[in-house]
Length: 161
Figure 1: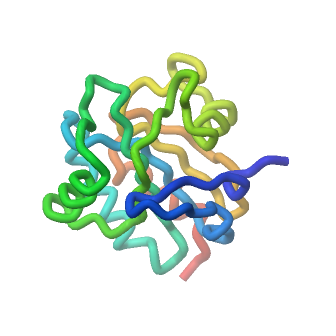
Figure 2: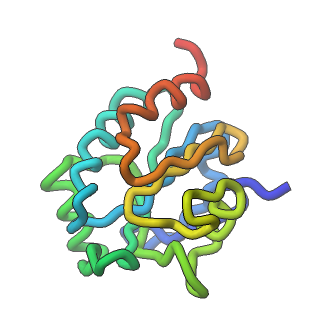
Figure 3: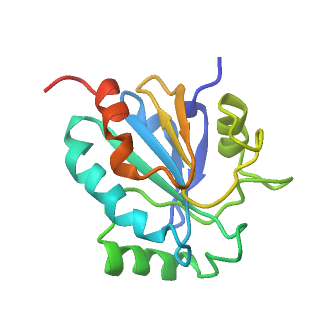
């Protein structure tokens, strides 16, 4: 059976990262953009990471420029924006496609595991996938679902303190 741990992606610094590095961690995988109405979600995502990373949550940000050309920057510009505007410390990856022929294999798999309002496609930036410690997709959330409203679902997957 395929899990999230079977995939790899290039991080925002240009290094290949195997998602198997996150075995045993709960993942929240998010397609992001710097010039979107939902961009302020970076702040609450960082708050979730600050709150739960010590218990095993890792947020993975995947910049994507497929929706309204809202992520036009380079990886360096994206990293600087995330750091200076929102103090993002969770792992960010290189820009990818989430839909279409060139969709990243991770996103092809995520969409096949949990479809959304428009079937398998990602509707917009800041779609979120919650993945358990074994690498299975547990839930999918749309762009309008705020990060803080996901906290209870994350708590259920984390070990008790």
